[in-house]
Image 1 (tube, helix red, strand yellow):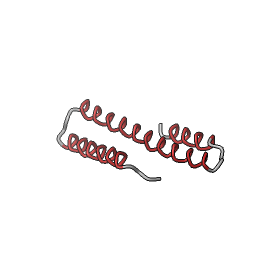
Image 2 (cartoon, one colour; image 1 turned 30 degrees about the vertical axis):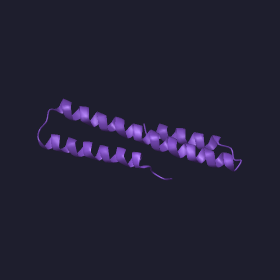
Image 3 (spheres, one colour; image 1 turned 90 degrees about the vertical axis):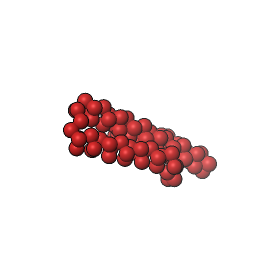
Length: 86
């Protein structure tokens, strides 16, 4: 699979957020603010996983259709990946 620059940028953004959270903890920031930022990172991760899985699914389905294969297996695998990530 080819990971797009958009996908990589999402991960870099989360990396920055995580560094920010660590700094907040080191600075003794209030728990509520730290948890808010952690929740934002979790949401960003969930969305990024969705982008990666859906992009991969589209690629696999197109290839399978071109080769006359059944696409149901790819769809089921994508759904299972998303369910496991929860």
